[in-house]
Image 1: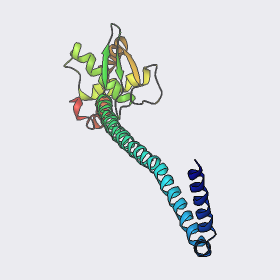
Image 2: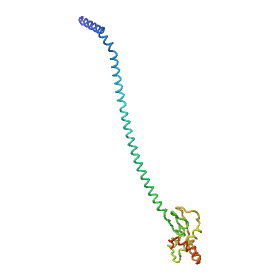
Image 3: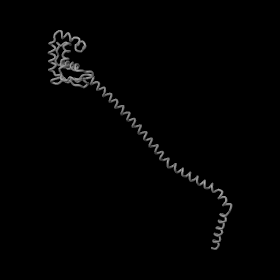
Image 4: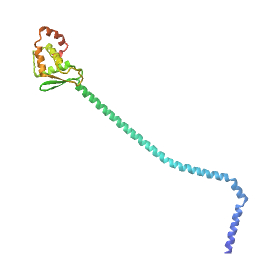
Length: 208
């Protein structure tokens, strides 16, 4: 027991002697700055490494999100382009159908009249001409000359209820009784009247 105490006392003395050794203390003082600098560098390096690991994941996430956004935008743009093309094609088809409908006069017959719907370039005179042609198709009269027909269509134009401008889609009604009256009056024309109407009849070859 006494031996162990003596041994511990001897070790403490040796340790004190080493610490109090001038050479050891001098080396520690001379290299203190280096030791502190190395320690600081280690701390800074560890901080940088830790920060880079934290920021790398958000950056990758942001890049992935941007990539997804670009893909979505590209898909939306493609869908929008296809939609615009399809809408344009539908519009062209609709315009063609409208032009086909409005390029010619359309007719509807009722019990009492013929209803003419104006097409492109139609006028009251042309609508009256079409109504007369529809009437004569159902009631042929070979005695009527082009001059008679010029008189009839002018008579119809002046005696219908509608006296306004004609546009595409305008509908004008010509009663069958009015057309019959106009035909009857045309047959009462004298030779001079027929002669005067001849120059107008020449301008409408379809009446021949």
